[in-house]
Amino acid sequence: MVLRNHPRGRLAFNRDAIVRAALRAYVEARVERLGSGLWYPVCDYSTWTGDVHRGALRTDSGCGDRDVVAWTEAGVVGLAYEKGFGPIANLGLTPDTVTGGPEDVRPAVPGLPPELEPAFQLAAGMHDTTSDLYTGKLPNKKMYTERLAGVGFWLHGDRVAGTLFDDPKCPGAERLVPWGMLQNGRLPFWVIGELAPLAAERARTTEAPIHAIIDAVVDRRLQGPTEFTPDELATLLAKPPEPKQLLGVQRLLQQVGITWPGSPELPPEPPLPDPLLNPFTGTPMPRPKR
Image 1 (cartoon, one colour):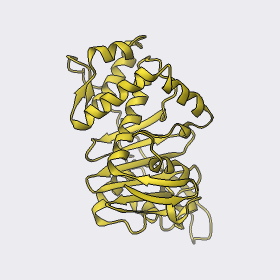
Image 2 (tube, helix red, strand yellow):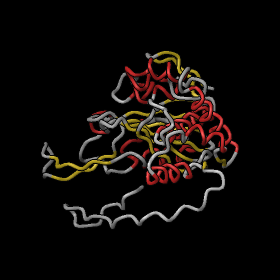
Image 3 (tube, one colour):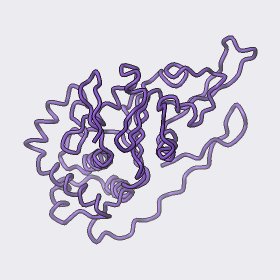
């Protein structure tokens, strides 16, 4: 564990704790969609890639802000974006120097150890890009594309650094602070704002059995692929959702190595649509991801 002072308080960073909290947040959001009675997951909008050894979690506010934590055996890289504050606004880049690739956001993690390069590429790759027409002082009008992240941190061994500490009040920092303030292996309730007191009270009372199941399943998954027990499912599916939604949740949980006991093989997912053409270049845009 690495401790650092921050305007928000004393932050404690631990690679394994971050991975557990990321997995728990993802599972919690899926459990909420099962009709389990869970009301306030800490991350309503989240996307997972990889596994508990090498992977990443992206969480979105639903209003344009987002953060990604990515991990490998070597450590963790976190990158966040607050709407309107990407590399040009936050990191000193210009429309002439951004490329839309990971290098746009590298200034957010100065001093990044080479061992964390795979985690950095993974974290940067999960952030969106945006394109616009620059009409400023450059000789010619031109389209530019920037990768949208404006603040970051890295954790390697007993070292932690990044613009989260160099510029602790910069836009987007608030989305990374919770990863250094984990509570019992989970993100703190205060990340959901004014609903935090109600969420904490429900977790302590009404929803305590659901949270106990989530904790048990997450801990089992950290040891290897697992499945819900019949008793756990009986609690979580007290009011089962529509079959289509249930199937969707099952698919998403299978991505992280959690499934149903004795569940049949899932039917194949429908193919992704063909990529659209970029209206400015006429070339195919990146194929959409699930």
